[in-house]
Length: 265
Image (cartoon, rainbow, N blue to C red; front, side):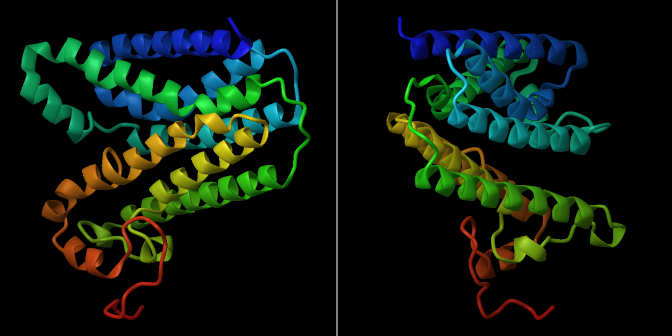
């Protein structure tokens, strides 16, 4: 088996084991939403597992590990801080109410195992970029990848901070956040995630891992059409009536100039 094959097998086992243990904790706590803060850390675990198994320490491998670690820890720490002291997320409560006594094993398959598989697949560029034996020096494609990653981290970090600050003010209770980065895209954090993964893919492909393109494509589809924008906006209008007007003037995903009916600030 090739080094990449061995790495993929090892990271799959490690990822599945980590999510299985997290599932056991969720049963004790009766809170499946603890899976959310793990998402970022999961990629950090995969990156370091791949790096530990690699036979070299090229500049590109070190760069991929460093960028993945910075992104993953920031995301996990933010979600842990945001969810601390709150009850189980409404998405999982709805699943728990729907499945009743079957939820314990349904959550294992449809939440924890599914997330393990998606996490493992999405991280293919990181694993391949670290495991490749290519000795190509860092170049222009790596620079483009680093730029994309930086833009993505900026949108995620600033967008999360702006929204948390907005929600922290009592006068904004039930209101729609349409300021800062949220004035140009309804989901700056999802757009940032999109840029991060295409940036990591660009760096990995610069070392020869261009064949892993299905991973950032899957992540893009999830962010825009499945678990990201579409899922969040399926219920948000019911909870915030003003969101319908916000949608008419603000791009859903890619940042852009607000339409002319945006109220003056």
